[in-house]
Length: 338
Image 1 (tube, rainbow, N blue to C red):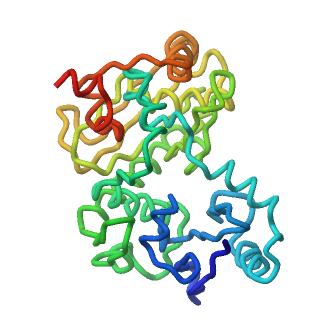
Image 2 (cartoon, rainbow, N blue to C red):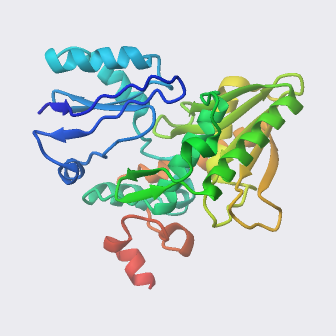
C-alpha cells in the first residue's frame, strides 16, 4: 500500500516554507486514514508519506534530514518504493510516541494498569479542541524562536487562519497569539538572565531508568555559569497546572540531567500558562537539585514504570488518573468505583 502525494507546495517566501501534503490511501479520504490508525496532516513544516505499508513521519526541523532532502526523498519514494527504508526506520524511532509518555505520567504512575488496558482497545483519537489549539500555539512560538517572520508580524501571518487538526477546525485567535508571545518573551528573557544556551523542542531520554519513557521538552536553557538548567513547558489550556512535583517536568528534567548536568546542578522547572488562572500567576517555577531529582527517578519513577510493565499490573481508579484515560469505558475497576 503506497500513499500518493496529492499536493506538494513550496512557497516563495522564506518565512512560509510550507510543505502541504494531503495523503490518501488508494484514492481514499481522511476517514480511511484514521481507520488505518494514522493521522491526517496538513500542518506547518511537516511531511507525511508511506513506504511499503510503514509510516514515515518526518519533521525536517527536528531531524537531520532537511526540508529539501525530504522533498527529494518523497519524490524518489514515488518512483522507487524501496528507496529510503533506512530513513524510514530512523524516523519511526525518533518521531514515534513513547509507550510511557511523560505527559501522561501522572495517570500511569497512579494507575499502572492503565497503560496495557489502553493498548488493548481499538485506537480512537482522544485529541481535544484545546490540544488541537495548543498545536498552533507551539507552531507560532517556534516561528518566533527561529526568526521565520520577515517583514510581517505574528498577527498578520496567523490571526484568523483556519486549519483542520484531526476532527477539529481550529481558528487562530488573539488569545492564542498572545499566549505564544508571552511564552517566547519569558524564555528569551530567561536566556539572557542565565546567559545560557537555548534548546527548542529537545528530545529527552532517560535510558538509565527506562527506554520506554521519553519526550520532547518545549524549551531547555543551559546556564553553565550558574550551573542551572531551566526546563520550561508551555501550557496553552485554561485548567491550572501545578509546577511543584510535576511528574512530566521532572521526567524532562531527568532527561536534561542525563546529558548536561552534574551532581551540583540546580534544575529549574517552569510552567508558562498565560491563559489559565493560578494564584501564583501565569508563570510558575520550582527548583530541585540534580541529586534529589535523580533520587526521585530511581526510587519513585523507575519502580512506577516497572509496575506498568508487569504481566498483571495493578489498577487504581481515582478522579485525577481516570479523567482523561482512554480505557475507562472498559475498565472494571473504574466502573466499580463509580
